Image (cartoon, rainbow, N blue to C red; front, side, top):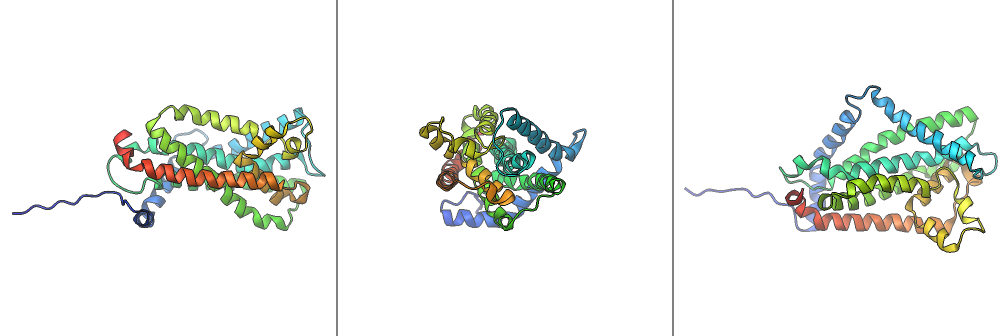
Length: 280
């Protein structure tokens, strides 16, 4: 009597892989919903952490901006200037950190069954949109308090949110794949987030850097290469209007780096994905 066995293996062709992603969309939804349910489980104040984290970041960054006398354009209140930057930064830092550690956190799942591994970090990024909506609600309350009405530029906000998502996903995929083989990256991720906060225009505006005569052009170029510069400047322009203009050359460079991160992140992730179960 002949015996048959079924071998489950990942698709080798990119076309089949992306088709598999759609086929496993139910798993994507399940992982995202699971992360939402367990994120604040067994914490004392529960979901209130989603409110406290952006509020604490907003308070600290506003205080630092006031302490170091960073410029505030026009009649824009400092809290709104910082709040418009805290919104995308909180989303990016959370999404990047969660996606970078997602494969290690789901190691038991990776070693048991086949599914496109890209689902794991991608689902964590989508979950962070919940925190984004909570932070956006806080910003809306501030705008109501200051009686500040945004202009028509607000309609472009989804495009900059997409750019923030691309930046977080691209860098998250790259670090997640590296983290499987080199566990040192779990210690590097918090440093990247902390350092990125200081070199991104959260407590200050890009005008303080790009219009300064004391800062060398090389430093300005390196500053513009930070992908979050374009994201934050875009959010500020959408919410606060033309009083916080976008510096076009730096913005285009920042967008280019974000897209490059996505391409490199996906390519490296796909090239190393087959060996995740063996290494992890």
